[in-house]
Every structure is written in C-alpha cells, then in structure tokens.
Length: 67
Image 1 (spheres, helix red, strand yellow):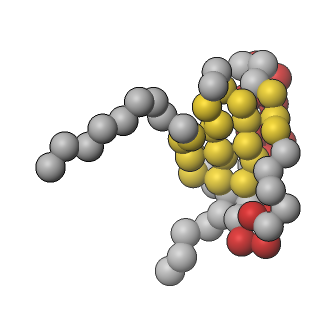
Image 2 (cartoon, one colour):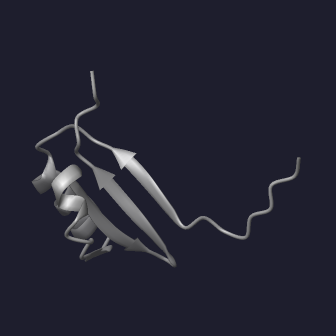
C-alpha cells in the first residue's frame, strides 16, 4: 500500500495544563507566530491554542490525557 501526501496540514504539541501564559510568551512573543481563532465547538472538548506556522496550523494542546 502506498500513501500519497503533498504536505503537512497541522501539527499538535501536548503541553502541561495551565501553561497558557508561557506558551503565548514563547510562540507568540519569541517566535512571533500569529495566534488564530479556533472553532468554538472545539472549546467544549479541548483546551487548545492555534498558531499559524507558514501555511500550516500549530495546535498547542493543554488537554490532560485520559486515564
């Protein structure tokens, strides 16, 4: 089986819950990435911040893992 791909659409990084200020300082402040609005429906399930990275989305996920 061959899987064809053209590019990466998005990448998700898991970070510890509650580190929003540090994430915004680093990704927005230091790296200069633009935070983008995520769909409201995702806020019900995920604690996540989205950034624009070139032509991709970078998802920073603070949602604790399920036990």
